[in-house]
Amino acid sequence: MSPAPLPPGPHHPLLQTLLFQRDAPLFCQKRLSRYGDPFTAPLLVGNVVITGHPDGVRDIFSAEPSLFEPFVDVPLAPALGEHSLILLGGARHKRERKLLMPPFHGERMRAHGQLMQAIALRAASTLHPEHPFRALRLTQDISLEVIIHVVFGVEEPERVRRFRDVMAGYLDAYTPLLMIAVPLRRSFGGLGPWARFQRRFAALDALLTEQLALRRGHEAGHTDILSLLLSARDEAGQPMTDEELKDELRTLLIAGHETTAIGMAWALYWTHHLPEVRRKLLEELAPLGPVPAPEALTRLPYLSAVCDEALRIHPVVPLVSRRTRAPFSLRGHELPPGTGLMAAVSVVHSNPELYPQPERFLPERFLERRFSPFEYLPFGGGARRCIGATFALHEMRIVLGSLLASHRFALAENGPVRPVQRSITLGPAGGVKMRYEGPSQAAAA
Ligand code: HEM
Image (cartoon, rainbow, N blue to C red):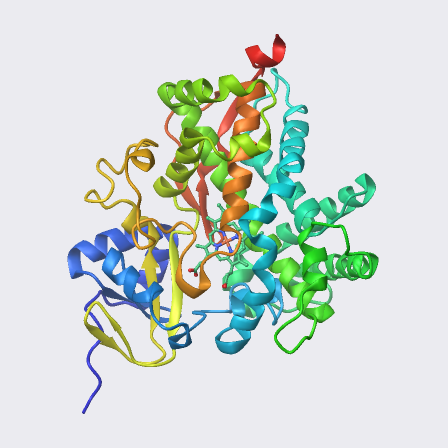
């Protein structure tokens, strides 16, 4: 018997890939209305079956994890390393997640609140009323510094500066072109983008080796994630090797830096684009004074709803992907092993039955009802759900709450800001231009 055909969809892989890369959310939205849910997108990387329906998302997220493996490792593999959680499947993925998850537990996050706040306020203190700034630049600086301290356990200011420079160089050198154009990944006599990336990768690697040597044996009493990973043991009582640790540190940097920065930049944008949202947020913050206790910020309902809504209206990662390892049924369609699968987060998040007036930024929707993991999925789901979700939400609330309680900002944009594709994430076009308007009334008093 021949295998069941894949769900319907368009033809012409080259054209479809170009359209997918230009605007993935729109690509999915249009084809789902035309071909039904799920549909098959013929991309250059192979056929991918895409769903944007909560039932399809449920099928994927609640399936037995051994049915899937990562979809493509080609774009990110050179930047991460072969032991990276993102690239692993099966039993190795399960083991690695068990080792990595405990340091990201909600309770552990309490230890980092003061530091997150101090980093945010220090970054804001460099702003000047006469110099407009880009919100994304500010939040990238903050989220990079948070990772250097909280994840990598670097404390001394001089070493923090070194890490910042080396990491920024490494992130910068891994260009979107290198991600997709595999033939470019060779050195042209020590010249070209690949050679440059290799040099910066080596510089970061050397710094990571040094950091492991400094931290190893001195983990006790430290709450940074590297220290906790150094003491972690798997079921056979084995610690992580240096190569595993370094690959995971690079993974946490790549997965956690830009994503959280974009989430915070959107939250800043919307709070200043809509005066009513800003007013409500300031009203909620007012009783906490100019420098609220970080723990109190994480419990404010409206502030949390603003962050949740920012990740709903513009999901930073618009699609999450898998590849089937065995026959799999998606909304009644039987898919053979080796089929690419994607859940279109952006489509689920703009479903008017779940989110009335989906194009409007309405934090109240998160105060009025709870959404299931198949209806609200900015962090993906199932056995591969983002391990940094609590970390990111904690940071977003503390940074946004602290900035707004002690400073005043205004938008310096002439019109609405749209999302654009930035390598593997979707972020605000132009980075959101803003003006600094001085200390808040409470801070000035
Ligand atoms: C707003 C910020 C963030 C967003 C929107 C986000 C989103 C995501 C998404 C959509 C996935 C894929 C999940 C799936 O396939 O089902 C993911 C995976 C992952 N994220 Fe995040 N993330 C954020 C912040 C972070 C942070 C702060 C860290 C760590 C410091 C982190 C570490 C990871 C890791 C390691 C994975 C791979 C998990 C696996 O394959 O098992 N993320 N994230």
